[in-house]
Image (cartoon, rainbow, N blue to C red; front, side, top):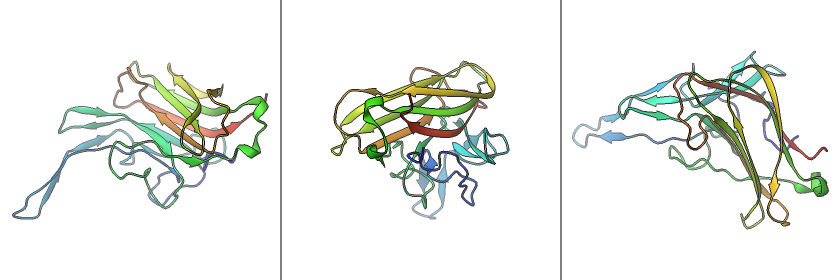
Length: 213
């Protein structure tokens, strides 16, 4: 279970973001070369923290904290911003490597020696989903070898209203016999092809990877 850094979300930063989790997105910023003043797109957040993911106190499966995700809206561009979270290694940062760009893949070390490869690998987590529209969220785990070639992947769609914590446990579909050395783990508020809605909420807690039968 320790494969997922801060998978219980009990490590919370001073800005109320969950340690080692975040999501990048891009928006326009302009600079007046005459005055030096900057202007930027107006972003409307649906959560109580100006971020696409943040810590939720009390509304959790275990412990004191869970991670809550919500969509945002670019008022200036009149477009939705898909909420979600990506796991990354550097706990001093608020977002995955890459800055405020649409870069949301982070390669985190994966110790395959802690597993019995005969049983494969499984992704588990608890979640609440409160969509306002026909949103379909998604969890994605992908494993990579030492040269960053994909070894296997699992994608878990999340749909329908779940006001109590539901449990997901899904196996990784292995496509190679190479030993996984890195992993990429993320949650998205909108599966490809679905439409995000402002105000929809996804809460996850106790995210883990193991190979119990």
